[in-house]
Amino acid sequence: MKSDSCSDTSLKITNVALLFAGLACLVKGVHVLWTANEGSSAATALTAGLFLLLASTIDRFEVLKGWGLEARTKQLDKTLSEAVATLNQLREIAELSSESIVSLNSKAGRWDSAPSAQVAYEVVKRVRANLMELGSAEQRVKQIMEPWVKVTTNDLVRVMLTELRKSLQLGSEHYRIQLQSYPLPIQAGDSNHQLLLDSLNKFGSFEGDYFGSGNDWPIGSHASKLVEFVEKMPLLDESDRLKLRHFISPWLSRLERLASDYELLDEDEWFKSLDEEKPSSNGSNQSSAEI
Image 1: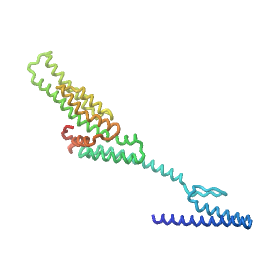
Image 2 (image 1 turned 30 degrees about the horizontal axis):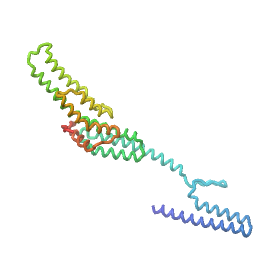
Image 3 (image 1 turned 90 degrees about the horizontal axis):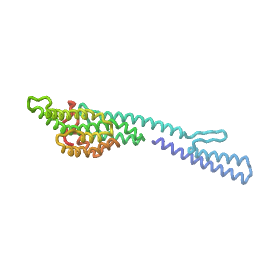
Image 4 (image 1 turned 120 degrees about the horizontal axis):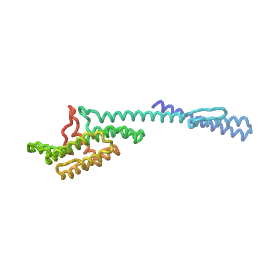
């Protein structure tokens, strides 16, 4: 820094000296031409003055041409091109690194001690901010964040399906007990017994169709899938359906926000619900609580 300052000072002094020398030569040339009418001497002085003035401001020009002389003092275009190329390379490296960071951060500890939902979200927000400052396209940033979105969404939906399964299991358990206590012997074509069997199978088939595919739901479909789930699931008491609608209602807009903007709406509610479902050290989920 000190050497650069000295260099700038020396350049300014040199420019000032050349400026005064150039002005002096111009004045001398004009004076000789005006008083002595000596064309050759005046032309020499004037030419020297012009060259000295030009030299005093040479750092302001990129290319000087004249009398067969070409002096290149700056290479702005080349420097700018190199800077743009370097920035593009840094952006690409940052995008690739960020993609790995988000993916690893989202999946880390799935079989041991996963990071808290809040910690994971803070990492994702920092990565997103850095990429946006570097000028990465919004679509590319979302592509990098997608592993975190998928993991976060699937974790939350798993919590909700666990709660919904409890209502489903109440119904299936009711019909299972009814069948176990059904009077023997069972007559062929017994319509009451067949009704109990059909009801039990209805609960079982619904659970098999819906509970095993949650992780395969595409991003953006989870809210509508949960609504469909609640409206179609068999219930022992139909009045329970209204309770289930209220249960999923606040999460529909939160899931939609995550799918569209890749950010958490009501983030404290997310943290509370997700951290209650973190895997334990043996790989199993802790018991879930009400959302």
